[in-house]
Length: 325
Image (cartoon, rainbow, N blue to C red; front, side, top):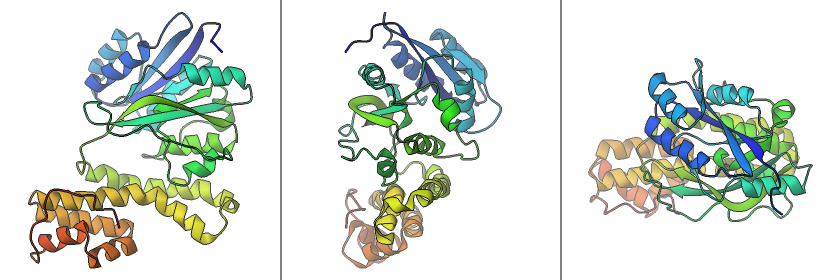
């Protein structure tokens, strides 16, 4: 089923002093335009170099909105408030859309008038935007319970999500008190309405930072992830058959943080950084004390890295997957 008329999609793009990445992001949006589709690009800028950001925005015909409140949530909200299109779409300033994005979402919206939002697949990419993994999710729950899926450890990357403009009134804006995971929180709210659907189409290249290079960011995010999980999981606790199953979902939500530090410990030990390895081991234990302790008393790459870092073993070889049991 084709799109029969020109659709206007408002694209929310938060940014903070990354004009080179922003240029790539906005170019990927404009590349999808055609006779059937046009974009109103709204750049929410809470950085310090407004001139550079404004120049990039102007080059792509985007509206540049200066935001004085810190956080991606505030930048997204400024853009959402200014949106006039029929639909909302999103893109972080360091990611890019694929050429397959948007139209499949619109086709689903046209087929099913009750659907409020649609999320697609995400492709993890290296810092140069080269894909490094197959698109995710590779499957969804057969019962269509996307809220439960998002509380079981799947974080929907907002660049692959579109919504009808009416979600602003139905579910509100991003929570600006959350300096991390405000996009997950917002999508959980929308998914909780039961009118969110999925298209199995790769929609966004999700740029990853070099492994082990962003300790402070990870540490700052952990309390917000816990808060958002509790905010949405507690009111719907009956979705889980037992407390054990609920805890499994909670641990799945935090697994990425543990994996980050466990892998970082092995990588840093392999590079001869004993202090960095000890730091990573300590914070892996803070995320999952029992899992970490188990891996430290059994023959694992994490154990080898830790023992070397305290002078009790040979330096490990090149990094392996430390998070595997």
